[in-house]
Image (cartoon, rainbow over all chains, first blue to last red; front, side, top):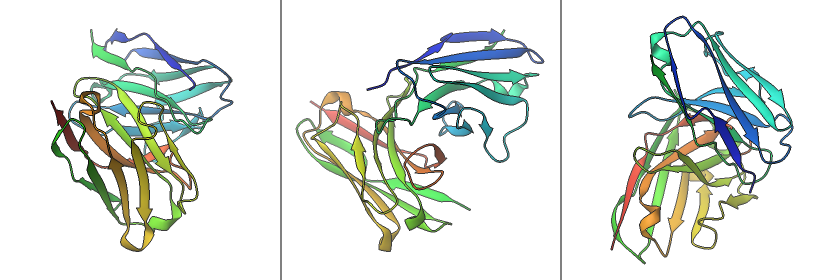
Length: 107
Length: 120
């Protein structure tokens, strides 16, 4: 199975900040990477797929980049609604592994 | 509106079996792949299994391979997960998720989950 490693595990930031979450794959996954947001008590929500394509109705302050083994999720101008847990997921192989998650918390 | 509703969870004895169901509405069921994803409360997401739009391809996480079987009935707009030989480590909230297209990922829509508790 392809292993996905996110960093940091926890990120403290303030409203208005620009933050970046990194996701590394144990082997090349080309651009077959998705990012999800999960709030407490809710199902995950797809934000980005194919590493950089914004899902419909997701605000443009979210962006993704990368290919191969290293990827980033950037949120420009944090809003109060953005404090949540973020997961990356690869779907290059037939076993769709998730990263361990990054908890974005209010500083 | 896309709606996915899971059912079938509950308390099951270790070694026992259960079948989870996911009933879909609001879209053409047979056009999309699906996944099951589980989450231990307070922990991260774990992908469990996926099935393609026509059921021709089914894949599984190593942790459940040989014990769980994913299936679908396009005529009933329903997805299933047959879970056998259950263990304590299978205790989790199980989500049904619809793929963006014909594969089970990326997952564009999610249900609210059904809780499976394996008791010893």
